[in-house]
Image 1 (cartoon, rainbow, N blue to C red):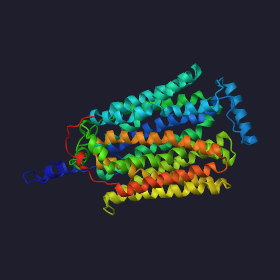
Image 2: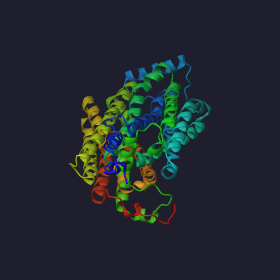
Image 3: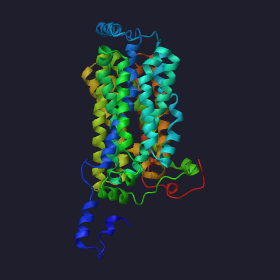
Image 4: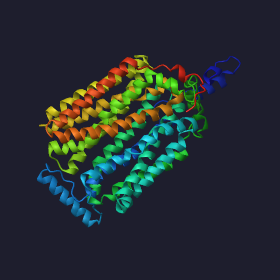
Length: 487
């Protein structure tokens, strides 16, 4: 029986009853341990996404000549200044062809397919603290080694990036197992949104200042600075993060009781996995399909925003990086606001959980698809182009309190494993969509971008239809009962 019920018994004195009740009332706002955990994870996600994006901006300074044929004189002049600055600071430059550059940029995903499922499973069964912590240490140290690896040769750089990608998946996938024990259902959207918004902020800051760092300090410092930030984050992670509220030394009795009682009816992770039941579960497939389709659009926007801005608006590298950062900061803010709004609608019982999930997903998919398709026809206006890119990021952020955390509803017991499985579909979309986009743009430089946007919208809307039909929010039967089928 929960402590809240115990304090109501008549055999307890009035004074002790009032004291116990006061201890059990959780603090409101963001001054709680569970919100502190969310902000630490925000910092972790900031670090790994900054390390994930830094090569995209640094590679323009790492090679001898990265100027596009269609660049303006101002852009070429900017590139010359970068090369002069590199010479001044003695930062090495490499003769990498566009094909080699593409391989290096893609190498982060080469090993990522191997990590999500075992990472999610291990984190869900044995705890996320050390899984996430080890991943964070590994990716931060590897970031510090990238300049040395690049100097040793392309093969070494690719190897470092492959292992860095695996480490980053450990951080991003493993953290969801924490929320099974830490997030009350009515606060789940806002806590996860606060944590995930760090990813957008990391990409934003790297694109915003990465070019300036390369120009004034030299490109190695992009990796040194953001690798060091990740190491600092590790100093916060290990002493302050615990897998279970019961074990946290600083949590109040009231907050601990509130979290425990709010999750009292929730099954905890088990070592067994009902594989056959999962394969037959259409609500689970609705989530997996949503991950693939929605991340197709996300990867297109993230990977090609700088290239699209440079080729269409004829801007310099520094300017395109700064302009490309704007959608990320807007997405960071909207992810947090979307989570708060979703929890408000649920806590006030304005909408049911299934309605919230499908409503936010519908707004995110239809809004981003409409703006993305319209992007090609406003290319003559720089202001409209940047505005539409920002709106695309704003709408896609609505998917986070929608289908992207739906797995916590249908199977909290197996949340770590399912999140890992979902990441496989997201990574698969990230491996395919930029390649397809490159082929379409290469075939027709004029209509290629239009076809890229139309294809992304068609895939995203197809995933939405599938999710609206089969998406559910109640805990599935196979997630309630113990099974003898093992993974």
